[in-house]
Length: 330
Image (cartoon, rainbow, N blue to C red; front, side, top):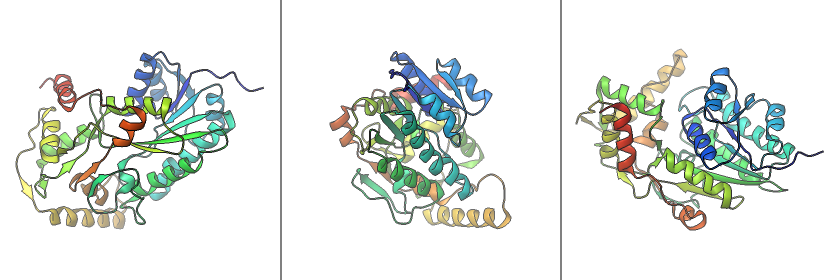
């Protein structure tokens, strides 16, 4: 006998930066939330935010199916987000993990799935300039991360049929209060000696975590099945100005040292070769994927989300930076 459908939302990746904000906002909206948790630490995090814990991981289709029964939608935000690692890990966590979420949603009879993707699916080694959702995915993605996210996205969109509506959102450069991964890494790099490769005067799109959450919740309600939506903070910003301001919220001055772009390309190629050759742990100081997404222009157009979802950023860049300064005491 099928479970009675409620307005409960099932979230994967709930203990992550975006997932925590999603759960808090959904609970704030009055929505019951279930969150997948593969460890006790993750369980404690999502429980404290007001979500019901579903123990399991993306490999456990049975656990996800049981947790999804009775839910009205699933937001899939879990993936391997590192830009370096073994292909087998990207394949398992990002590609097969997304396939498993789709399979569990179908088995549980959940009618709607929002998949959190990324602008990185367009990365091919060249600048990404004012891209919209009609731009095709590249034949040769620039790294395992873009490749795996593109594969996952294709599968999710192909699953839009037979009672399951699937929607993809692509936020660009998620940032904001509560970031315990990217921002600390930027600050640590600046402490060691930051270089503005290529001068850093190129443009970039950004999307504050609060705006990402807002856009996902809109897509949940009114996104069209089988469609992709970019999410941003609005007009692009200069990379050097924005990243500099972001790093300074942590009490660190990135300085004004420039370096040619060819030096970054050489560093990325050499680092990747050395890490592969000697099977080193961790990741190189710079990868080709990071070079593509950081030190070349990446601007995307969110007009479709504004038109179809009535999306408008709810947090400005200025407010987001002020929150970070207050959080860091600077």
